[in-house]
Length: 346
Image (tube, rainbow, N blue to C red; front, side, top):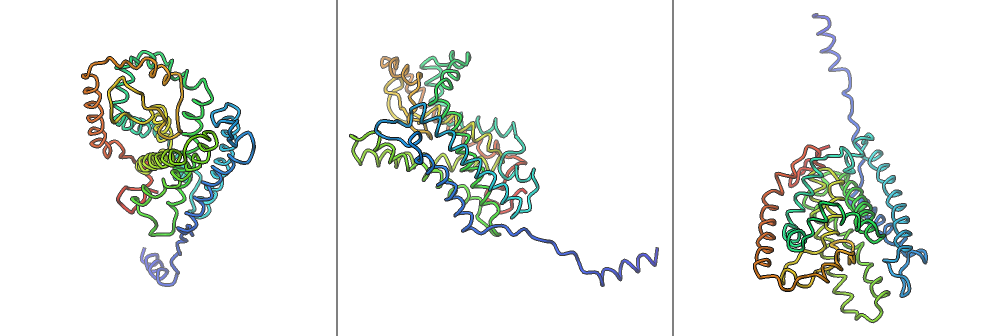
């Protein structure tokens, strides 16, 4: 044993320690540049062909336009996904499964998906109470009739499937993963949450141009206010979605949350229950489905004030419970980063 020990000791002095090769990573400028490129690749192709470009005679809600737009956007997101996977494997030395994890695609995370949806449903406790209890929509929910009706039109397919999938993969999965491989120290989790969604908000500014085309008699002021509001709530949603992705490591949960928010629209924060319905999906623009028409026609203006009081109590209670449960429900071993902690879960 002595000669072996002596040989090992002498070898430690002579042999050079193996040098660990650090991944090259990418610069913050490169990450920002690629994020801008991805945003342009998502928006600009919508105006390349007559079938995707809106005009006074062709609405963005026309079935032919929706089909063409879904097709071209899907191709753009696919190309950006392959490029990002290449960058993660080359510049972060990530093996295939780790690449999928950094993109928020693996593991699937059934708990994380449920937790993300439950939290968001708490935020919409008031609107769910109004639709389900006050308007009696719970019967349709149980039978699945509302879901079938929503997905039976191209507008519904765009708002509840295509838009959530393509937008969350590009603006959450791809753009966030690029910022996770920035040369250390890199951006803090707080920076990731509040800056990466700006690309998502900016990507919706082009609706200003579309609105002026399809509504030539609307004033410029109306169009600007509409676009600023859309930029505001898309950015606000982006902050929430980025937080969920970073905390849970699952983009699938955020896709479902996105579709749910599009279906619910903006929550009522003023007025009487049973009055004028607040239209417009949170993320995808106005939602003119059969359910909205029924609510406008049957919105019982004769409901007692008690229903309105109950609505706002449920809305406030849901928001309080959401805030209380936000941190414990989003704890996950699959987290991409530890929020407010610089160390990443690799």
